[in-house]
Image 1 (cartoon, one colour):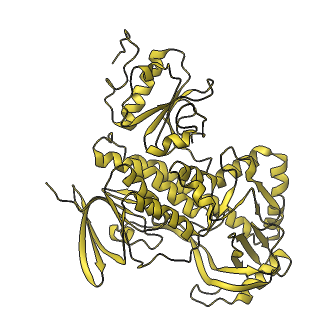
Image 2: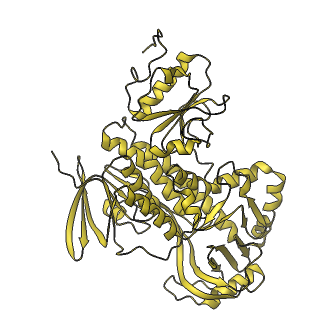
Length: 502
């Protein structure tokens, strides 16, 4: 029998790796994180947490804790004149949260630590080899090479992923924009709209407050395209901000000032045998829309329960492959969405700038277009493909349904990591018995909702409005076999005296 140091080894202690580790540990899976940085950074590019990510954090009991670290906004301004009304989102979190990435990491690391996760810092991965049974990871710690063996490895180590390089996986795409400047500063004269993307013929400027008096500014000056290695002056950032926002903000007390370039890239496969890629190791895109950190954490939410099922031996055939099947299209969509926002911000011709200026008119005249944009940016529109003939809700995000009993809401019921069957208490599938180790039952307050089986990541695996109990039981039984690894002929007996086919 092969000896393993851990069940899952995660490379990278950013938000993606930390959320994944906490999910695995919460399900009793042994895992560890290795990270090349000796200490966590107090500087970060990511600072926006969207509604769908907050819902995922709510399902882990830490959303409110994170919200306390930052400032929330019910509107987001694009291009200086297009206001996205996030307060109309159908979510417990109808806003976006601005907080530095290190606050997100702190909350997630505390959760992982409480669950017993080991984080090995100052460990640089230098090699990786996998076989049919596991993966050997070589790492340098204090000048000495150590090897750890795991059943599975996840590369969550960012855009310069050593795991991706060790696998020889191409990172396909292009450079989207060069010489983007980033500054964390105080302002003497904050703008009237503190959160937004402002544009002009000379470039663009994105501004967001951290809630502690500091502001994050991301700026691009069409007239000064310098290498990423070129130093940045505060005057450069101040000049382009003044140009596109129409006034001097009084930038001072700089904490961080840097220049970077932004790529649009994605790997062709998220799974290579026993190794998975997540977060920026799998996809990277422009900063427009603040999608990067959110997409990575949602990768982790999708992967965690599936890896736990594989380690614990109950994963149905093909479950691990659904990680790529579901998340790769989402990554592609985010690359396109961020790219379109960036292209609009960079409008180079007069015609393009006129088209950009008409966007608010289009959004005001066609409310469905505004709704689609805010749901896309917030992550609430993300859904996964469903088999032909499925109920329309299958694959979609589950709303935070109000419940009777010990959990008052669905996302509270999801906190123990199991599937949740939303159905009346007299539902035959419930009275006949459910496998309690993998599925819990919850009764919605509304009797008008369809019966639904909700996955641990908050997406709907099965739904039915069929009046016939036998039809509902057959559908649920099939879903439990597909997602929970339960034999299709046995898991959910019908009412006493009912014999089901199959």
